[in-house]
Image (cartoon, rainbow, N blue to C red; front, side):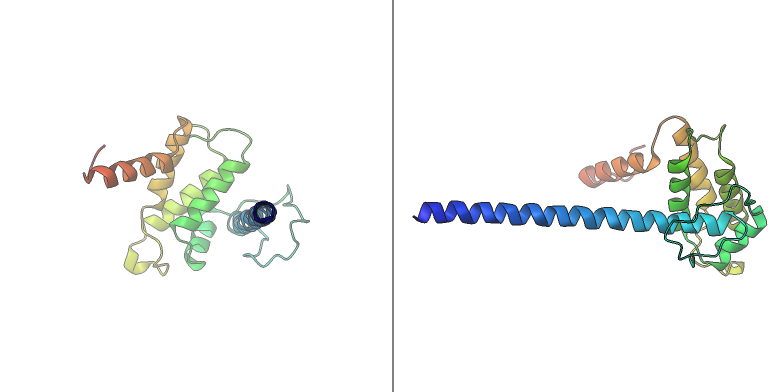
Length: 178
């Protein structure tokens, strides 16, 4: 009798664990969807005329109009400063543009959206930190994104290389392996 009770309890626990795993997977998918929507809204607000900065409540039903015009480099640079965007946020925009692109990105063949983002980042990078009201800007954003774009042209993900360097460094304790 004890064995049957334990077997039934194990089955119930497995079913509960499976249900919890499904719930976690759904929550993860929802979190990823919300993050992508947030980055998509950021792309619209930064790079296209007539978009508000994250205040759209259209739940993704209204698609970006083909007639929308791109902002100028100066306008995007001003938005990068005024909205206090840091490297991580700009990096997410960069990654999302690459993800949505229908062709591989590289230094030689870069989408107009990436080109606009990189040029605006360059304009913000050259501003002295003391003169830049966006203190979250580290002054190396454009360089890092162009390095990443260069790697993409050769099928190299810079994040993977950096993670590998960090893991090797943590194991061996050496400071510079490459």
